[in-house]
Image 1 (cartoon, rainbow, N blue to C red):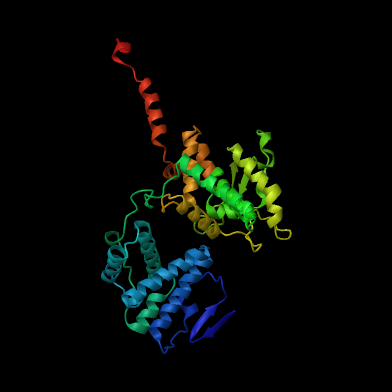
Image 2 (image 1 turned 60 degrees about the vertical axis):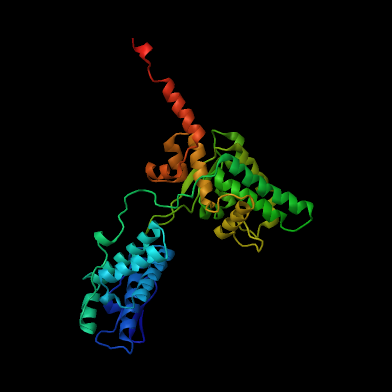
Length: 378
């Protein structure tokens, strides 16, 4: 169904087209024509991304916000944008706001794709702007004013794996919180036990925060080759990170850490029943009986991290880095680690792997012992 509001045609949510004719009434001048056309452009781009391209809601909303920020900063409308105006904005983001390289690239991609959309002859925005404003939008993002993607990883170098001693400190602090609450007779002991177990699960199966909090008790399976793990030989991740425009990527993670099985089994059998809401199969519940959020995990991790005096740049995702690194140090096959993490490419797994100095020295010493000496060559 198509309906009109303030001189603009609207289409039901999920319509896959961004045609100007769908979002504007032909030949009608608005009281605030420039802002009305800009909003119609955003509506059309939103429809094209969320409908035709099937991008995730958050991705689309973030890109729309970036375009709005650029328009507000420049003070001019898209059909008046120039490369010089864009360069001024980039200077502000880099020099004044000091955004990271990855964030800068995100802004540049959003503006480039929006310009591609409104400049495309398939959607009719060039003609609309010519008729209404006597000018038309152009592409303002080019090779000479945007950042090239020259390396795989551009994240914060402070984001590193936790060392094994740091990891032990974190887990000990989480377990200590349970004992403190029990000894003091304070409520929240079950929640503290939940948090301690969740931190261990994120590390022991190399999960992303969102993957971990969305696990259900029905996502645990037996591994016939390791009967000692019982129902916890495999963990089925149903909400893996999705590629743009695709649904979540599921994967099955093989259990490799026996101590984690004991921890998770104890939680499921003795603590989860105290927190479960109704017939829900969720593995983690908040104290209000809803499914636990990734933000709750991040807050608990940050609390313990700061109490222990660890690097403030560390986050729950660093537990996943630790998992990849420690499996490498323990001699697991790189392809196995890649599959455990759900990476399509080995190079991505390499980003997560930071072997310790002791392990690197061990490998170096082994290699040196195999180098033929002058005596053996005679």
